[in-house]
Amino acid sequence: MGAVFLGIIALLVILWALNGFAKANPAMLANVIRLGGGIVALVAALLLVVRGQFGLAIPIGAAGLGMLGWGPLRDVAFGGASGSSGKVSKVSAPFVEMELDHDSGRMSGRVIAGRYQGVALDSLDVPALVAFMSEIDTESGALIAAYLDRRNPRWREHGDGSAAAGQGHAPGSGKMTEQEAEQILGVAQGASAEDIRRAHRMLMKKLHPDQGGTTYLAARVNEAKEILLRRHR
Image (cartoon, one colour):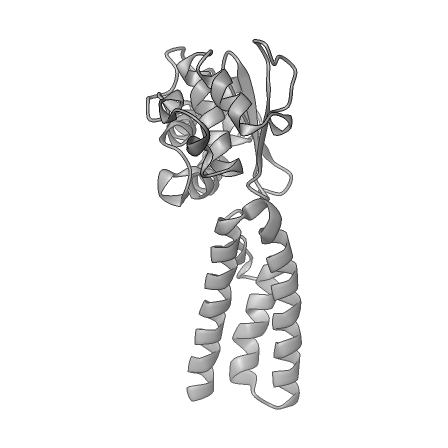
């Protein structure tokens, strides 16, 4: 019983560390932690099997398989993002369009109107983006603010924090179409209610304000879910 208890504790510690590092910098750390942690866990499990300590080997081995994308713990190790591989969410506003990679959590975008039209946000420095926000509409500014929160959490030190006004506002006044909702959730046309809810849960883990996201993006994701679920009622 003691060995089993230690195995469970080891499993919880591994998964906790995985999720903690992924949230800290998902774009750079998640894949490295999953691969490295999975390999280390499997090697440790194999050594424990050789020594006859099966109580420890089984949970550690299961955790290792989960980190590598196999076995029943896959959804836990991957933050509940089962089936999200290769999916991208897209959100557009009058001046900006943004993409969120479901696997890495990386956010990228480009300017589609104004003086920086056609320029990728990654190629503009923080002061330039902050200044640009003061020239555009609230919805576009909220998208850039969400992007900057991911890129540089201390970006407000570069300029007037009021440039991000509107971040907590409800989604834009224009009615969201089903096509826009599908792009935001990253689901296919005619997706099932189960797929819609799964995509929504996964995105909220990455975009909810409690997880370092923004109220604006969380509201857009919630709106997209409600619009797509209406056709299943």
